[in-house]
Length: 237
Image (cartoon, rainbow, N blue to C red; front, side, top):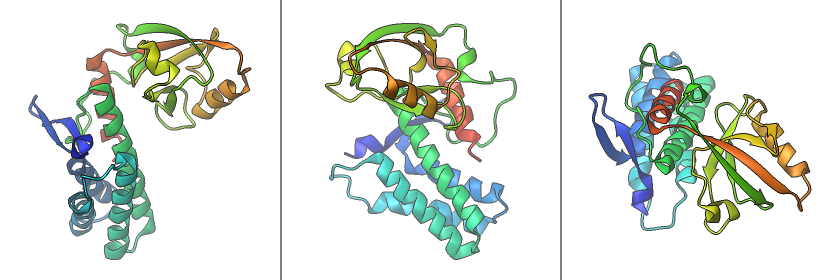
């Protein structure tokens, strides 16, 4: 459905716009080209490739937003190769558009408006999601399979994971305690926030399937999540 591809972004003047995901991703592709030494014409071609992909897909089909974003990212990278012949710039565009799409989709699922149309980071902002004192802790007990899809908070090699999705019908979804965006703090009194994405997945997989998992999540307030996601989006360039 086409509604799945609409995201809420800040317009830079204190307001919000609900627009197709291709618009901020096209801006991102253009800016990444310029930040990596490309010139305006190449940036224009990369952004146009993203927009054109959005125009060509059939929104009446059951489409995966993530898959379509990846396809748009590849087309933007191909446009860079064709126009500039620089694989490094193309790789930067491919990675940024893919990550930007994931970020926008995660923000939408969390009901967050991202400063996705801005390209400079405001000064004197907090440095990260976890530094907000108004965060809430949520305690829930689940058994395998828990029905939680995790994603790294930043780079997979950095510490911390949060909930990317709660599939309908899963134990976590049915608990009605958790939300997309909640950050995993601990499992069975073992701190998870200082482990990487892969270390956390390994920890979960090694636990006995019959065991109960006592999980504690940290939920950020909406204002700080919005600011943090905006910083992450802008830091892609």
